[in-house]
Image (cartoon, rainbow, N blue to C red; front, side):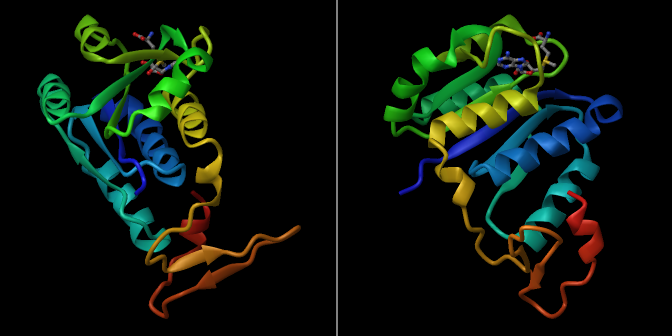
Length: 190
Ligand code: SAM
């Protein structure tokens, strides 16, 4: 059975983070995560964007808002799950990924927003650095999932997709798998 991997995005601020948080969850979905949570300010625009992509492109990825990230992390561990926090201050991914991969526990991958409270570092089972240089939550998450799934995520198929791309050497070929799928140009832009 596929291992469950969820993302917790901390401290979302609609004004500054709308695109980043949406893109973070799109990357998570495309690269094999099962779903996500976000804390900070509730943002229905982000939720609707992700729902729209999932309706058209398939799969079971869902996100939900959590008002108390600390409670979420405590509960995750209480239910037997494991937590990875992505931070440039953590241990190099190359040193720890084999051990993280070997565990079959459901995994919560925490990524920060503007400022990450100390408690996150303490509650995480693993503080993992994807290089010790600052970059972004999206690149850190993408590389982490790629290492975790060892590239198998690149060939994922999504259940109940209404549209699907047929890879081409040049140009675009899109299959409509259901007649009522309309807004094709919009979906192509993601
Ligand atoms: N200075 C911020 C802090 O308090 O940690 C980092 C902000 S960074 C734009 C947002 C998030 O991207 C971080 O919290 C972390 O999850 C992720 N990130 C950025 N660079 C990373 C790296 N080299 N390794 C792992 N995660 C990283």
